[in-house]
Image (cartoon, rainbow, N blue to C red; front, top):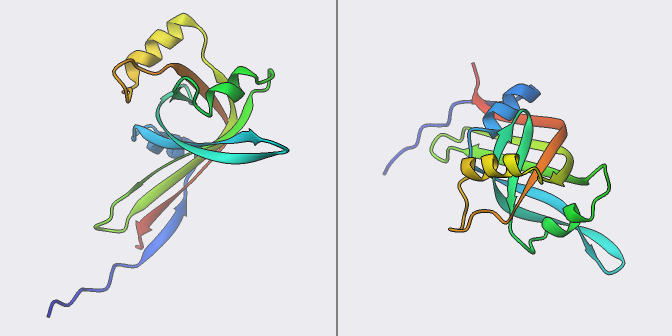
Length: 149
């Protein structure tokens, strides 16, 4: 019979926005939460997407016809309100972090930026992303599960 040692005590630490963005930049995938208009109501949708960070903004891939593309094309100057989440979990140790950024997004249309972002992102298809979307976070929060001292 194998006896497991009790896990080391854990604590949750709130992250400063800069540290949260640094962790977000360390992983290539996240999930975007955005409003989807259905008849007579708006409901949230969650989509996994590739991302990179550029000067504090989150740049994500959006496929043509994807749930994200239509709202951003129709957005006013403020953009579409979204949340973006990424995390990393070590299932062996139970240590993890989670970051949520909320803000507004717009399609990236500048040809030089599009070319630079396409080169930096690891697209899921051979054609690369159909559209690129910039999320300017107004609020960045994060937590880390760490071993207690």
